[in-house]
Image (cartoon, rainbow, N blue to C red; front, side):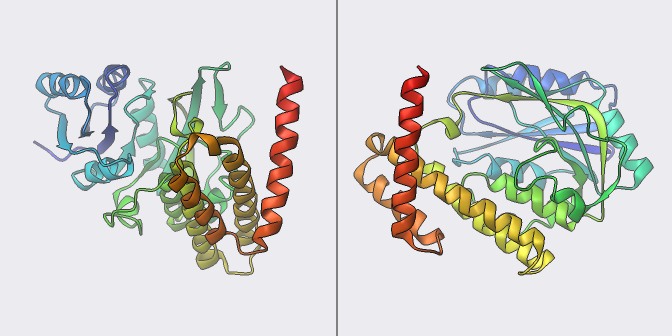
Length: 317
């Protein structure tokens, strides 16, 4: 079998409801020179059966099975480690892409000689109408340096966070590769590290359909919510390394990190009763570890924010 031009990496965990649509969207691409590597992350539903059916139907699909890792990063990295192509795209198993995505992303990469090509995410929310990142006013014809593009992700994402189409060497140059890191939001660190290391970043106006689930861990009372502080500190160190410790860019990340710690302490007041005592202690210890200023003042300020938020929610009913 000849080496494909594009490799697609898909981590899959209990995705039986959506993975067939995801894999069909790959099968229906107008661009045919691809391989798709799926890593089944210890699914307990019929995800594996669906994957096996697609692999039997088309040899461009291959798959691997691992015990549940607790993070999409680990199966994604395993899929990427098996990729044969020089260009790799990641897709989540509950998402899907429009039929012309691979054709246009590859053509844009060849035309611009960019290291990464970003597309437009169509975000399908259960609570609101679909919306897009970047929005309709964003110039998809522009070409940026990696350092320019990464500032479109801080303090919030103004470009789509999923569906990066990037050179294999960038995926393999990530500092978190194969070292067992799996805390929450580590994929957002990986994406920003790749952007910073990229020489040029281009955009193409094709659609990646992203499902925003109300059942996501970000909407649950869980100790994992507080792991994002680890990622945020890593981001601050990354920006300090590449932009300078006194740079404007690093200061933006630092301010973002402080706001997020404040928000996390407020969240802990709200969900405290839903956590086990040892989880509450672990969350408090994590916040204290990552907050470099007077922790007592943080406690007071976040408590009053929690009270005001509770009053506001009561009267909004």
